[in-house]
Image (cartoon, rainbow, N blue to C red; front, side, top):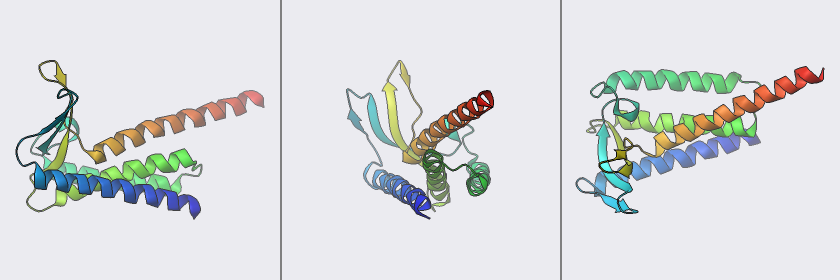
Length: 163
């Protein structure tokens, strides 16, 4: 149960941080922006009515259904995975908390889409599509999961070559 406690804590902290930051941005930044590092980092309210990186704008409900389905698959995978390392638990917790944060955002009455607010880049050169804490958690969790798979594969190869 102790290792699940860490997962629950990661989900709770990440989800809280996501929801609180989104609410602050909606309440305080209806117009304008806050810029850091010579406008390389910009905080500005953007509603994403589509999917990741703003693709397929206007398909909010379709992405809601897809997000719920993927969340269900991730939870199923987490429950039935036999080799749950600490890294695996942390990565799945980040992915699940990010997915839940964006699902909640899609269900919020009066919001046309998911609240994105972090923008990184140089105007006129390249600016990464706006994102939020949930998106960051999903990306970091996915990268950690790649590391988990790599380490597991490395361990399996070592076991095969040693036998």
